[in-house]
Image (tube, helix red, strand yellow):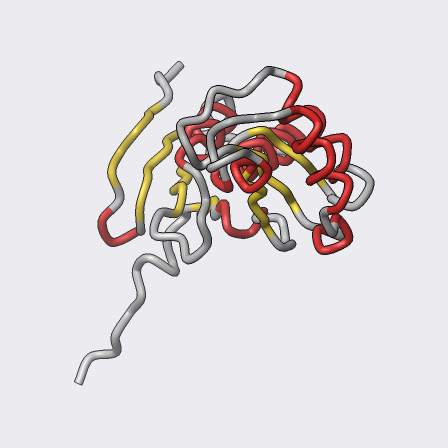
Length: 169
C-alpha cells in the first residue's frame, strides 16, 4: 500500500489565521433601554438615577458594547454617559454591538503585525473560524497582506478561493 502524503502540509502555503489574534476576554453588551420608561422614553433624572444605582463592577475587565435594543430615539449624550460610568471597569468600551467590539479590536491589532514575514509567499487567509471573527477583520487582513504576498487566497488549503495574485516583475 502506498504511503499517504499530505501535500497541503508539504506545500509552501502560509496560513494566516485571524483566530490566532482573537483577543481573550469577556464581551458584554449594555442595553440602554433598561433605564428607559417602557424601554423607549428617556427621562434624564430617572436615567441618571438608574446609572448611578447600576452594578458597574460586573463589567470588570470586559470588552463592553453600549447600545439600545429598542427603537428609542436617544439624545447623543446618553451612550456617552453610560460609557463614563462603565469605562473605569472595562478593558474597552464601544458604542455598538458585540461584533463592533471585535471590529475595533482587530483594527487595533492588525496594524501592529509585521506582515513582512509573508513577503513573496502564497498566503491563505483561513476561513471557518470557531470564534466570532468579524468580516471586517478578514477585509483588513487582506489589505495588510496584499503589499507583501505573492498571492492571497481565502478558505482552507483544500478549497481555497483565489483573491489576489501579484503582477510578475
